[in-house]
Length: 481
Image 1 (cartoon, one colour):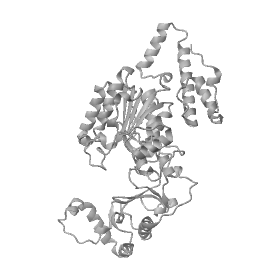
Image 2 (image 1 turned 135 degrees about the vertical axis):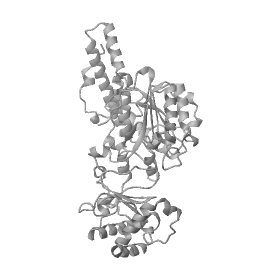
Image 3 (image 1 turned 30 degrees about the horizontal axis):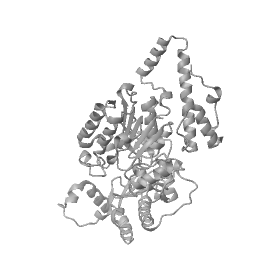
Image 4 (image 1 turned 45 degrees about the vertical axis):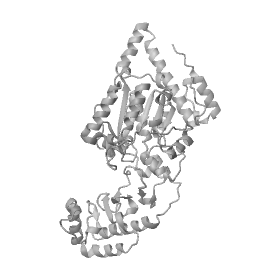
């Protein structure tokens, strides 16, 4: 029987220990390669090791009365139902491909795993990654010698999403970035890791009428891995994070390790169970930085519009408002009009019906020098006007390429790799980098360059979602909260 001393499994307040004491504790527990780890990472490693040793002891105690053959039978039976002994996995090594700023890194180190290799083509991401994790990523994955990658157990990668994204050209495998999936396959073929965890945009599931997914699934199975027959669509909202961010997560397990754990039912409307909202991630220590310049003028114009409607008991339209079409002379055969006839006709009718009230507001607004271009379009998604919901100062709004979009302060739209930062009405300011880091489940202590962080967070994976997926895949833990 494995001997686990009481001082190993007793409850310890590890946060009170010095780093040197934590390193000594790691040595006692047989945890290696940890000198470069930060204090919080050492604590995670120790806790994971202690928990795994407890589970090993319980398994063996269950079997102590049986013969050696019976012990083997019990362990084999646990393997049949997808059981993974954490004692065998508590120090797994992983590689972090297309690593960005390390969403996968943070998620898997929470399980006590060790990152032995990372790669990203973006120099700014490589710098931030090294600064935060003490590991310098390699560059272009297509130029890396596969046999030089250190031995590893888990392959992680949020391979480029632009070829499959609705925001891009959706060229898929016809885009050279889309072919990077096959570079992952080359690495898997040579190294044969135990597990793969890949992430991509929602549109991957339906791209090219489902043919893209069929190619990916067949490639994974041909390499000797189980994966789910249908794309697993998960939303960050499923994990009680107030961001509407839906992604395909591809979880794979080497066939000789047993089948995948059964996939639970996935809630189609995760926002209804949300208990953490945007207000909960707001940094109370930040002095309010009021809007200036164009955003200040845009705020004033559209807030005045809301008040005009509210004061005159006019129902706010649920369709996109295109003010340029309210009084525009155009040909009914205009190509744009024909394409968007339904919405444009609604706009014209709305303006004509309320001309005496809206005309003054429209003329005054057009005098604003900064109220030009896409900001003249407006989409209200915050429900009916009422006392708690009748001003931009009570909502969350974003200036997007398609216009101003307004919603309730429950959760934010998907963060994207562009400077479309949501504005938190109650504070009348943009969300800060720290707040956006929280919305991607990164630590507040994360070091970043403000010049690049918005794009980098838009491209990042959500740490909590990936951590839960890894625990589900490797340990069979509950996928959801």
